[in-house]
Image 1: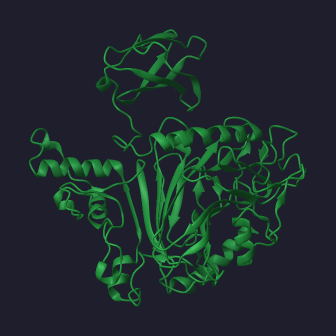
Image 2 (image 1 turned 90 degrees about the vertical axis):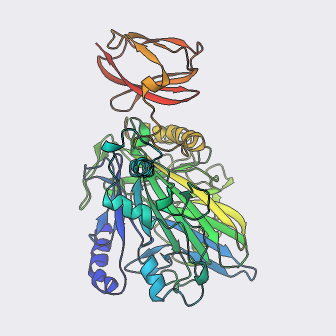
Image 3 (image 1 turned 135 degrees about the vertical axis):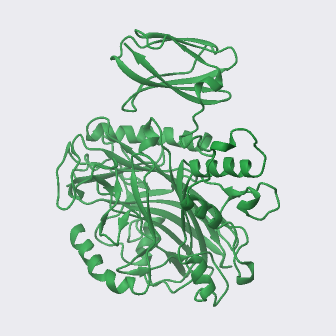
Length: 532
C-alpha cells in the first residue's frame, strides 16, 4: 500500500511541479537525517518518492513515513475551519510566506519574497559571523588575522533571515526571531544583528493558510500564520537521536474560535510498516510506536531493523496532550470525523472506552511491558500499519491569539522491542526536563551547551585510571554527574553530596573510553575518561 502511494505521487509530480515548486532540505546534524519541505507533509520526499526520516543516519532504515500538523476550530456559527498541510498529489492547505493583505499573494513582489519560505543555518555559522563581524568592526582587536567570514551560503542565510514583513502589504513587521545588537528594532546584519535559533542546527519555515483556497481538505481557512522550527543537537547521549519541533501559530484572520484544537499526526513506519503497534502514555505526554515482535523483517521497499527493533516516541513538550489515539485505517476521511478524533473521540463522535468500561481520551494507554495493562498486545490485536494522532485542546483561539507547541521525536534501541518502549517512556521525562531547563541555551562550538573543562576549573584524576577517580574543584559547586559509555548509555548517574570533591568507582565497568558529563552552577562540561 505504501509503495503504490509513492508511485502515484511520482506519476503526478510532472503536472504539480509545472505549477508549483517544492522547496526542501535535509536536517541531519546528529544521528537523524530528516527531510523537510514546504509541501505541508514532512519526512516524505515527494520529488524522489520515499520516506526520509532515517535513523540511524546512513543506515538506509527509516522510522517515519509522514508527519502533519493539524489545526481546526469552530467559529461562532459552529462552522468548522481546518488546516491539514498538503500533498502534491492531493492539493494544499498551507502556503509559503506570512499572512498578507488581500490581493497581495499573487503579486510579483510577494512571490519573489516568499517563493521559498525555508531558512536553514547552524549555530556554529552564527558564532563565526559574530566573531568575524566584531573583528571587522574593531570590537575585537587580537587574533583577527586568522578569523574568516562564514561560508557564502551561511552569509546569504543570515542576510536573508525573515526578521521583518512588509507592513505596507499587510504583513506583521516582526517575524523570525533575531538578536538586535544596537537595540534599534530593525534587523541588519551590517549592524551586528543575527538570527536566533534553537539547537545546533535548525530549519525555520513561515507559512499561512489563506493565500489560496484549501485544495487539500476543501475547508474554510482559519487565517493562521505558522512559524515552525525544526532543530537538532549533536551530543554524546540520547539527544543525538532526537529531532525537536517548535510551532507558533498566530490567528491573523480576525475570526474568533470558541473551540480550537491542534494535533500532530504521525504515520510511523518502523522499518517495515506491516508489523507495528501503537501506544500512548498520558503521564509523560508521549505517543509511541513499536514493533509487535522482536524481529522487524524487510518489507519491500523498506529495510527492516532486524532483531531488537527500536521504538519511536513523539513527546508533547509545551502544552499537555489532551488526547492520543490510534488513527484507524477505516474512517477519518470526513472533516467532522477528524474534528472528533482531535477532540478525544472516535470518528463517530462516541467516546473511547477502555477495558474497564471507563471513557478515556487516551487509547492503548497501558505499558505493553505490563501484561494486565491496556495495550495492543493485551488486546490481542494483529500487527500492521499504524498511524497515531496526539492532540491539544486549545479552548478559545481568538483574533490576535498565539498558540505555542513543541514536540520531540525520540528514538530508542537499547534492548528488545518491549524494553525499547520503556526506554521511550523514560526518555520522554528526560527530554521534557531538558526542554524546560536547557533548550534555550545556545550551542557552543556547534555542540550542545558544552564548555571546555579547563574553563570550569574542574580536575579529574587520575586519567587514565584503574577504575577509581576523583573529581575536584575549589571554584565550582558541582550539581550533577552523569557518565556514559561510547554507545550513549548511562553507566552511572548521581547528585554529589560533597560538592567540591567526589570519588567515583568505575572498577566494575569494562575497560575503555567513557564520557563524563558534569554540571556545575556555571555551566556544563564533558570530558573523556579512560579505564585501563
